[in-house]
Length: 70
Image (cartoon, rainbow, N blue to C red):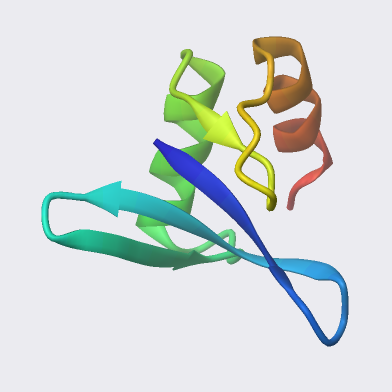
């Protein structure tokens, strides 16, 4: 499960949180980051993505979000 993280001060997506066995892992929005590359592949393949408020996005919404990312 992945969740979009928005910086509250900037109201801008700045990272993606991933649920892991002992908590959460933060993945920066960085095209060179392998975790970021894997996140995009997994979401396009059907992994759950939640918006910043914790609402599960439809696959179409998730695909559209991924297409907008670097």
